[in-house]
Image (cartoon, protein in one colour):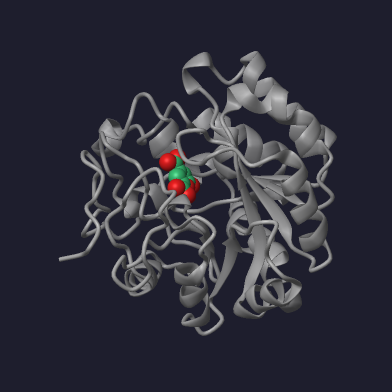
Length: 305
Ligand SMILES: O=C(O)c1cc(C(=O)O)oc(=O)c1
């Protein structure tokens, strides 16, 4: 029994995911996933907004192999705050098959940043989703961005679509490659031609250093997974959004499972079926190769490209 009690209503990750019908290209990277603890080994942060179930590196690597991915990018989850030990341990244990994105504070030393780099970290995450984190002053974040730029890292940003106007000046001043989590969380009920999504496309169009993860249909969808066994694909209301981004910015998109799917309370996706979502948003072999192999390799394993 873990010392931590899971947040009520929280669903555990899907235990026996199906084998995807879609065959991933060789060398595919799951460019957004997390590890949670295990809490007894890597305690969750006191300032966390939720307490997850455990989701270990061994379970993540088993999922990688089951789905047919070659590599992972392990993104620091907010339940671990700026204590990167679980993520770093996963990267170090992966035999070079995982790189990481950390959360750091202004107080981090250059030596500690270098240690993260040596473990495989290549980015920092700035989170603006109010239900997940407390506010960090922008001058602190900008100072961190300036320091990590010198290591060749990038900044991953997570925010809600309605907050983009207010965050625009800060985001566009960042001196690094900037990777947006989950397409900036569009409200899909407003439609792909909404003003809100147009602003996101403009953000990417006008700033060539901005990339997007076209991930998390299970979070963004209103129609949900129910069409899974029919003619139509699951999460179909998210398809036009992700496909628009993939087709307009094929060199600047990434895809990830988001396993173990923090904070889901209505349903937990079968990760095999999430992989089957990919050909709907990246319909050609060329787009799939960029999304799943070439782009993440350029960002996380540039020395191998
Ligand atoms: O939408 C979320 O709840 C969520 C949370 C986290 C995290 O807690 O780090 O990461 C994600 O990618 C998504």
